Image 1 (cartoon, rainbow, N blue to C red):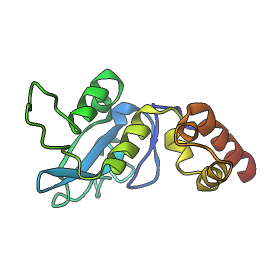
Image 2: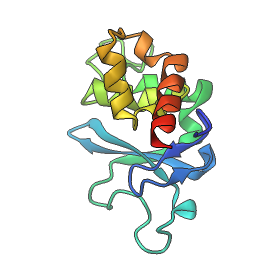
Image 3: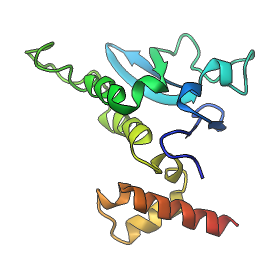
Length: 157
């Protein structure tokens, strides 16, 4: 089982990112809107080091930052600023900098909800939970996600 909120599965190579310092979040930007969020290995920790790393190609990349800057309180401030920089910086709010709020929410859950990162790969367990009438809150509670992972591991063994 992954260490919740400390390990992630790289969106490029599929290997485990072992700590926040080993991870990078990257995104694309189109017409001022960010999208295509991925959690990948920092180049120094990539299994593909010196070949292609795990990053987007230069012509695809719109920005990136360390996972360490997107977790904890600093992470909350950074991620919510993509939705609204606040009334002091933008009194005439013109909408989020994020192109797709569902995509942003998935990134947010991966960085802030214990067990979400691993449970999202247990698609059968998630389908079963939804079939059992899990609601929009209950499905994402850490205890539900942990149970899904444990059941998935038990079936895989």
